[in-house]
Amino acid sequence: MFVTEATIDSGRYTTNSKSIEFGPWHISYDISCILPSVCSTKVVCERNDNQFCQFCIYSKELSLPHFPDMVFPKNVLNLEHKSGTKIQFTPLDALRRVSSKVQAIEVACAEAWLESRPDAAKPKKTFDWTFSTDYKGTLSENITIEPTDETINFDLLKRKDQILFYHDLTLFEDELHDHGISKLSVKIRVMPSYWFVLLRHFLRVDDVLVRSHETRMFHMLNSDYVLREYTIKEARAEDINIPTSQMKEADDVIPILPVKEKIMEKLIVNLENN
Image (cartoon, rainbow, N blue to C red; front, side):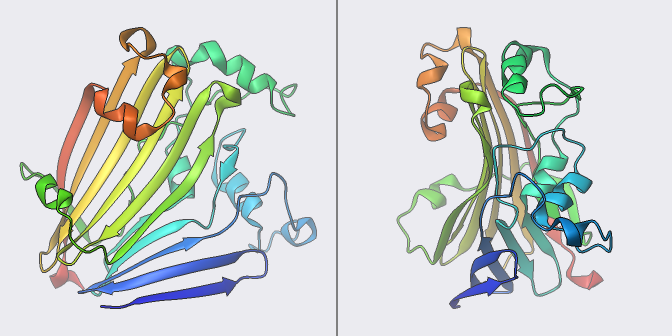
């Protein structure tokens, strides 16, 4: 079990990477800079030979008229089993899950947000301007998903054991034109007997609502499956005693939100198929 670090210069992006070998798992994350707001290599991208800059990749892959203020395209968390099984967390896949429909509860501030954009005079394409996403991670095809009654051992998570590997990655963030916050982040923690991932989309629309989509993954060393818990919490502003504009930290707000949906699943690593 060892940790390695590397810096990769891809020409357009310098990516800092860190990884750990944990039993049969290779766990790594990459960190880089913010997505540009325009094409950075127009001559190359216009050749249309699949050599695109990150901005053009996002523009081609997503049907969104706008991206969040801050997208970190190279911020990626990877968990790869020696069998070839992969679990990955990427901002591009997360943004693919943003709805193309605007929820009525969010419309009040949506116009102000759109008017703040340079191309607001162009025809407006309907989409969820809060960038809410139900993304739960990207799984390789050789993972079997089954419902389960087994739950994550949170008592084990609270123990003060040695942390072998940890990082908190921001995948994207938008301040909704000063009307709140929409942020997607993923944390990885590797302990002597398990690894744990928390993927969280936190949304606060001031004077409207607060919502969280959280995916927790928990894997005990020497087991052949990963527990995945997906939880949606939400409350309208009028149902919360604290003004939503004062709810700055997700960790302070999410525990008081009512649960709207909870799904427990097993992600089974199919060793015999590899």
